[in-house]
Image 1 (tube, rainbow, N blue to C red):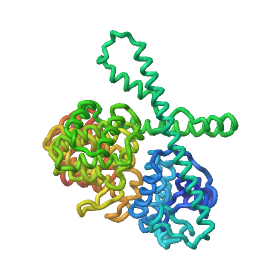
Image 2: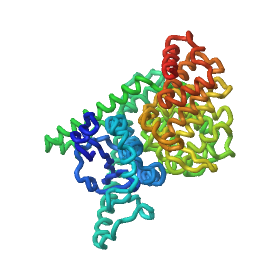
Image 3: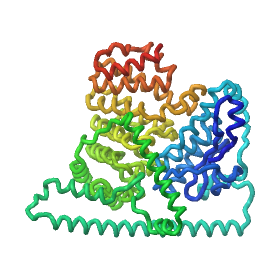
Image 4: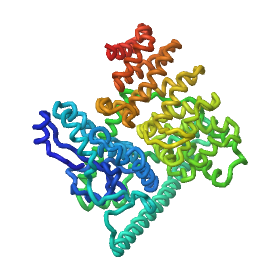
Length: 564
């Protein structure tokens, strides 16, 4: 984190106490990534013109493969974070750092940094300076001589001047050595995992042998075995093992200062985890854990596709078995796993039941902590979202299963943020994004005539409305012109509010009424001009439902307070 201006002069000018004006970047895989009016750029850590950062914050370890990350960063540079999209107040380096942090580790950067532009613009002098600052930002001044090194053939891979052949060779040798070290580390990890797995199996075998011989093996044995395995392989922080590596232990023994710093990092990670849990508990997502039986769904899927898969697809099916039924981590899923899922969802020669059982298994997979790694495999082909975009053309059973999958993705912070991604791609001559597809599934489900689908649709819209990301920078977004990409959440709020008003005409049950009225109250905060006007123009009046229950009355009051 870099300070562009100390707090004193800025505070004096604005009449408000500020610690500084912050520029942030993300360091990962040995490079520092940041965003400016020239788009996404990178450098060696602390290698920008700003020099050493004032402060660094450890957000945790990522399990996103490097190539997946490079594909993602290239996609951002060509879409959401092109140089032309840069806006000093609403789409700046800090928004980029926040997006990247959520992708890599499911964490947000500190809120006071994200809220800084809103604080500045809320002052009289800030509002007066906005046009001038925007003009300066648009003039293209940026940090020179840095570029995005995403790999050979990238249009972004351009240097300000040619490097000498010796330097090129040296950099190439360093990169090869680094990649070789990564390969060796990955190989060691795989070997360690296999050894640990073998030891766990031996321990379980000894425990089983110590049980009385007459014990009924069917009396919950499978569940206890899976619980035991989950306990043995319990992880912390989205996939980081509790047990520290020997190298880390050696460093601790040899250097007390490192030990102190690591303990501090651990405490900070725990504080962030607790903060996220507190946010989640204030508005817990609605998910469906008992909607279907995993083993039954998997067995039916296997029976339907038996003899119809090639060798690679058979391997992917075995990986799915390891991941879901043997409680292995997402590392068990190979690089081609999403191609297998794509075949099951998009191959119309397979019966409809294949797609239904596949979606049921995915819905249960969505409840696992590391499901985000599966979703990030889909950054390039968009297998899942392209299928979901056609929700209105699917059979009723598929729509029900798809709604279940989308709803359960809200269980974890990282996968729920994935549903809200705004990066666009082309599909069937349409520009679509994750948030647009999620919205379409929600509206289609809520307005269905099928009671089960309506119930799941009300849960999806409730979960969407409770996402804090919908409210971030709401005041700033109101200053932008209509059609701006940064206003996507305002547009989504309006679209969902219209669906809610139509849904209210069906006289829903209390549970569904509470979910949807709560969502409407939240959307009144996201788009405080448009949504209350819609309620007044279209109806029905929220007061119509007063007396249904105390909690519904509270949400009605929240909506009415925005209409005055």
